[in-house]
Image (cartoon, rainbow, N blue to C red; front, side, top):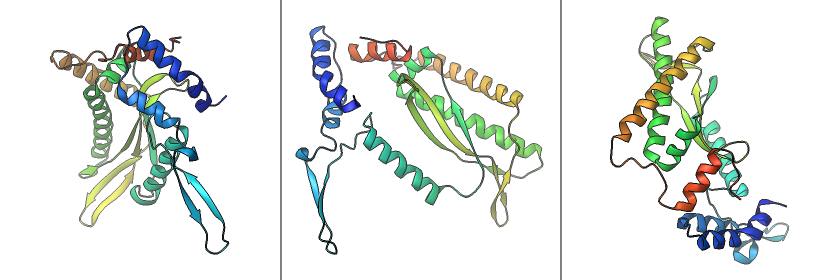
Length: 241
């Protein structure tokens, strides 16, 4: 049974049962389910295509264009973004993928608080960038710059709630010269350097959490009771039903 069949069979009962026990969900969840169940079905709208050469006619159903869990729309957006990065954005140089994950408690806090997520991921990129620039300076290179493309992934291999980051960084730095920037490749980081980087990121993120906790605006939970409970269970890889 596919995802659409499972959703069709159970979503109405799920939302009804949650409402019966007094748990609420935000409108975007209801809209996500509703639009997903219409995605790719001609009766909910389509465009007609026609080829003047072969006289073949066909229809293309509308897609939901949602960013939640629709496999079709997410796959199309992923492929389109990847093609744009390769063809337009990224120069032809070596790259390294950096992945940052978080402990369970921090994952839940990051899901509740977007500001914390943004700051934690900013710390992640700034720490790596600083590391690359310092290596370049030790090698006798002049002023340098680096860059990054970062994507936030909100689920793990078991579709559990797991906010983590995939970042693509040049495997080196761009050194400033009179004729512009020239790429200089660096050796791969050692195990010791990776351990030091992880420790720095950990300490900085924990300080950030502590500092934000002193702020009255720091959000620790969801406003919707049902969403908070499901998020906590999913973070811990537990089934809620």
